Length: 364
Image (cartoon, rainbow, N blue to C red; front, side):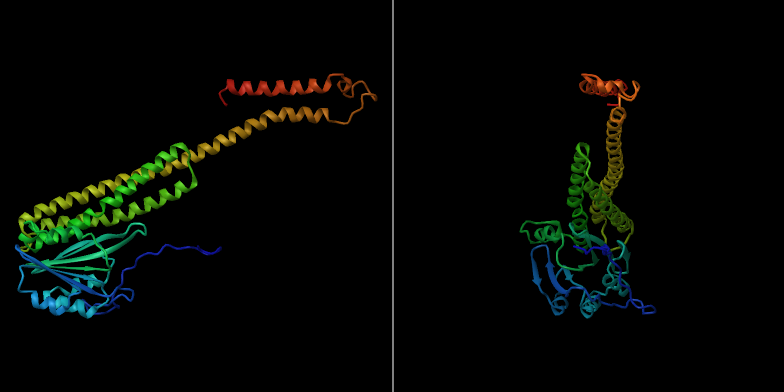
């Protein structure tokens, strides 16, 4: 809990940059980066092999022996290891610089013999934390770089490990790269659908009784929708660029599957846009309901005050200290035998008359 008098600020991710004037392609590790670990998956149509905690020697020794190799590097702390991976696969140094400087906009860059794809993945739904995943692929290889452990690639790994014939082992590296990108895009559906269910529940709750905490929830959800919009739009553009460009290491049949992933990204954008519009409308409705509720309270208080105003006037008049003995005009009704109950009945009739008038005017 933040102490009184302090302001709690939301942490924002900042993209690390090399020093001003540094040579292009300079790699500088983030001090908070995780330790680098390699996982090597070797794939052929008939078999596969996975090497956990692989070394760079394992990578170099198997490059020419298998039709497809997938090297997954988790953690970006070891700059020399990343540079060695770039040397083995002839990865462009500017692309490697973008790998280390996380926070890049989703994009696609094409080089002579390989493509470089940057996508963003929801790393922690509850903390609203995103992670950059960089994907290199060319003829016979796919290299992925992740900031930390945890990814949506388990379904892809299971398909590779399946004994049944499948496209991931029979097709080339471009199809494997498509499968990984498609898994990342599809991983957005569960949190977005969960957020949609939460929006619906807040809407139903608001229709019964609006509360202050609902406004806070709505603002948080709209902020998350804005962040998602900023991630999904460039991801859609990157996928469209990957489909449009004619490079030899992206086959035409793979582009058909990439087009399906592009459709998924468009569907996600539509969902986020719809939720954002709904949230904007719910925030306005919450303000309107709160204002209407306040107006109702003020109206009831006003009516109660108006009812008691004449009663207070009568009590004030009859409560004045005049003596009937001094003059016949000094409140002669004070000597009335039934004066007290008569006064009460009269004040009751005044109150009933005012209430009847308000109901006739439909103010109650």
